[in-house]
Image (cartoon, rainbow over all chains, first blue to last red):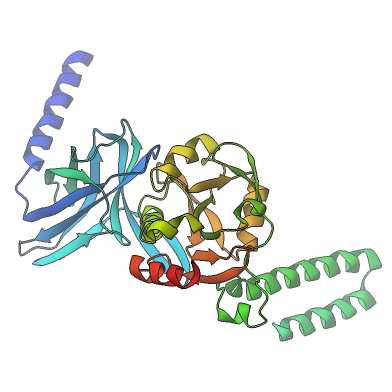
Length: 145
Length: 220
């Protein structure tokens, strides 16, 4: 009884997951991860997100096998004080481009499982509010000056 | 502020007349604590803006004695920087965005001095002594510059160093983040002279060229 119930539940979950993985109107470009300093357990990822559709969207999650978690962070200046804050939602208005760039929005890769190497590509799965997902390769490269 | 103090004292005087002395004493202490906190709040914003006003007297108000631990685990004082210029930056290794950018700028600006680059020492002082141990700092700083000195210490030592440089910092608990906590901080790059004197400071996002240009005016 319990086994069949579990199977039914699993089937339901599977169905929902496949139904959710719809097409997205977001284009990801210039995706890269800044080569972190040695011994750093965190790294920052940057990209451009263009919402080419007619509907407003939002980025709500990110994950990768290269680290424990990926969080959405924003750098904020309050006078001379610098803060970094986690955010749960980044709005992607219709027909607009949103840039994740140094000194602003960034993906925060926390708990790197292995040191990242220059030229390496890491895959980061981006999750959007409409339940669509994009698996995007990010190239590891040094920060430009 | 002033009205609050006057009101507090009037109320205290009335309280002494009406009630027992012990009770008044407790109320008095409470009023005093509130006043002290209000004064701290009131003065705080001036704490992290080392501007030209600090140097008009000709005496540096930024810098001074340091008692920290270097990336080899050895005790460190400001005396080790004597004779050289130094570029001092406060940050933490769990800062993935701003701190590495500033440290790279420092490193490139020093290298741009070529044969004179030896006269400037890059210094990174951690504001996160709990996580930034000497072992952690050593590879971190050397990936920016071979001569960069990474400094940490006890929370008290780090606080003292930050105070000396008028650096504001505060540990912010972030229960929703896997990081647990983050460190808010003011992010200036300080140029200190060969006798440990404060020369000037730059914003964290200063252009490498302008940092190099200022360094060139001093090294010889």
